[in-house]
Every structure is written in structure tokens, then in C-alpha cells.
Length: 219
Ligand SMILES: Cc1cc2nc3c(=O)[nH]c(=O)nc-3n(C[C@H](O)[C@H](O)[C@H](O)COP(=O)(O)O)c2cc1C
Image 1 (cartoon, rainbow, N blue to C red):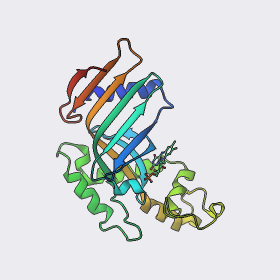
Image 2: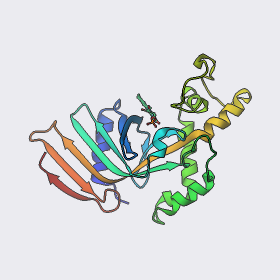
Image 3: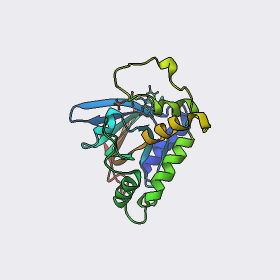
Image 4: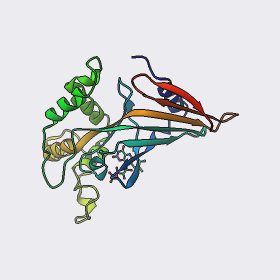
């Protein structure tokens, strides 16, 4: 699969601005909701991968797709819109998930073309593990706290503040792993607005991951 031009542009910006790894991630319910997340990596089929807690509000706002807006110090703005993916599926608190992670991986994998690595259900679980292993012990611990967004009822000073694979945090570790999810955007359209160039440039791509079609538009 050839790398779409917009991804190359984005990767160049990331290379030049290593501290700009946080972007805004918008969903709708259908009311708009927006928050910041950390870019982790691209998948082989050019999905943007981040991580989240399966109990968070955004995981119940998938139906209308999602949008990303990213601003770099070079005055380059990148906007992407498309399908929002969560693996494993949301936890509809206080109920347990309706499907197992294995079932979720299978359903998700089936939505990708057979030649895409993401069409292998194991790819998703392997990626989740890799991203988990890349988190700091402090960040891992945030996944075993009470449900994010719920009223604070206990003293946060008593929470476990880091999770490593020690025997004494085994149960908390299992709870945190259960809540940890890969959040992805599969872009359908992408736009790059460059206000750092003269004249300004605005470029749009549709069919962003399959056969990108490029149009230069008026900024
Ligand atoms: C610098 C920064 C980075 C963040 N990174 C993430 C992230 O990678 N994933 C995530 O779920 N939330 C991240 N958050 C928290 C979100 O912005 C948001 O508060 C949280 O996900 C709850 O959102 P929700 O209730 O709309 O689901 C980050 C916040 C900040 C300030």
C-alpha cells in the first residue's frame, strides 16, 4: 500500500515538531464534544491510533464518526474526518461489555480488506498490548481508578499511583487492562491548511486511505 501524501505531510510536521503529539479529537452524540488525545502511531492502513479508557464518554459517541484537528507551530493545520474505531468495544457502565475482546477483534478485522494487516483479529490484540507496554506505570494506573467522569467519592491520595507487574497489584492490573482500549480514526477525508507558506495553501483529499483524490482549494 502506497503512503498517502497527507500522511507524509503529517509525519514531516511531527518530525519537525516533536512536542506537537497532542491533537483535538471531536465526536458527536449528535451534540459536539471535543477533547485532546496523544497521537501514538499510524497503523499500516493509515489509521491514527491513540489510547483511551473504555468507560469514558467518548466511547459512547461513535455513531456519527469523529474528527481530528491538529495545529503545528509552523501554522500548518491538519483536519481529518472519518470512522471512529474502539477496540475492545465500550463498557456500558455499570453493565459488563456485551461482547468479548476476541469477538470485538473478529468483527473489526472483518471490516478491513483481506490484504490489510488490520484484517487479522490478532493484529488488534497485539497492538493493544504494544501500546499498553509503552505507557508509563503512572498512566497505566489511571485505568484502574473509579469510572472517569463519575462523582469523586474517595480520596485520590489512596489510589494506586503506578502499575507494574508485581504480585501485589495483580488485581488492579487486571482491572486496568480490562478498561484499556485502542482508539482509532480511519480517515475518509483530510485537509491541510498551510498558513506558514506564501501564498497560503489549502489541500483536500477524499477517499483518504483507499485511493486518495487530491484537490487544491482556495484557503
Ligand atoms: C495533554 C493531554 C493529553 C491527553 N491524552 C489523552 C489520550 O491520549 N487519551 C484519552 O482518552 N484522553 C486523553 N486526555 C484526556 C482527554 O482530553 C479527556 O479529558 C478524557 O479523555 C475524557 O474525555 P471524554 O469524557 O470526552 O471521553 C488528554 C488530556 C490532555 C490535557
